Length: 207
Image 1 (cartoon, helix red, strand yellow):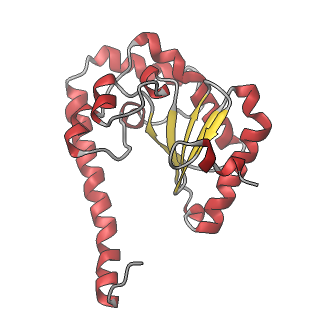
Image 2: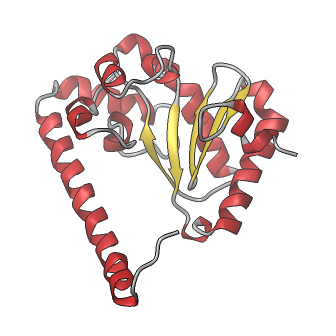
């Protein structure tokens, strides 16, 4: 339990948005510096790839950036365009993500990770067989302001679990629920897991 004086708590509350803004600004600066070093033709081609099958493609910064928490020493490897042979691997997961949004399971989301290059995976000690390594998976964070309290977050989680139970086998849907409106989707096998990457902690298997 955290105990603080009213003034201290108020200061922490006031500082939080500023810290978040600073972190976002730093990330954007890192992204722009990385982008300048990329082949413009390849960058544009990858951007167009998503426009071919999505009604509302996410911003390129989301699609090439691993925004999940990581040690500062690994941040240099958080940006990457996957090898072309992996591009189509992501398509089914993004189509499924867009379907969930259009079916009104949630209104807005931001992608926090897709492809994870081997260098980053090694640095963050990721799973050797992670679906991110071959660009099969998408991590995302639901942003709807109405889904920030425990009750509405649980409702969101239960709704996605219900979809997984009813439709998951058809889509070969892997579904991870990490809490705080953060999720993982891939189409590489019908399975589910929770905060510690174990099926035992998945809210979809709790009765």
